[in-house]
Amino acid sequence: MPSDIVPSDGTPVDYAALAEFRFLLRGFIEFSEVAARHAGLTPRQHQALVQIKGFPAGRAVTVGALAARLHIRHHSAVELADRLEQAGLIERVADRADRRRVLIRLTAKSEALLVGLALAHQQELQRLCPALSGLLAKFSPPSASLPPSASLPTSTRM
Image (cartoon, rainbow, N blue to C red):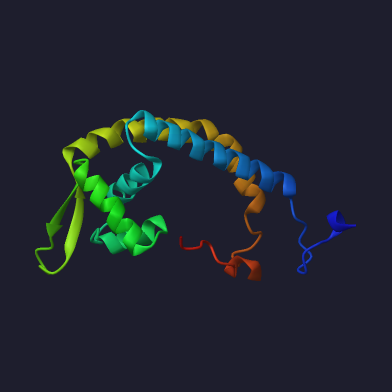
């Protein structure tokens, strides 16, 4: 019977934990989308602003880098940046070190929007933390090395 199939490495699959994790994750995403819309942003605009604000230190925020962080194609990131700029949420500036390169930075308007959204998201994550922590503990590898299945692709480009 199909429900008795065990992966080739012999590790049992905890489908209930996987289902609960996906349920909680989808709930958080829904919360985030509603909060973004309430603040006057599309969910994608909110995601972009968070990525720009939280960009790894020492790395320049370019449209290409933003595309990589959002897992979208470059031309989609260009269109998104255009809409963000038209809405007064970002500005493009020439890189002082390489004038051919254009950098993206947040405006005061987007910084103000992000403060409220970030606080709401942190509160929601604090609410979800006990449930998520328990589920994540179920998936922690017993040793420092991950099983071969950990090499599966983590995302697909859209």
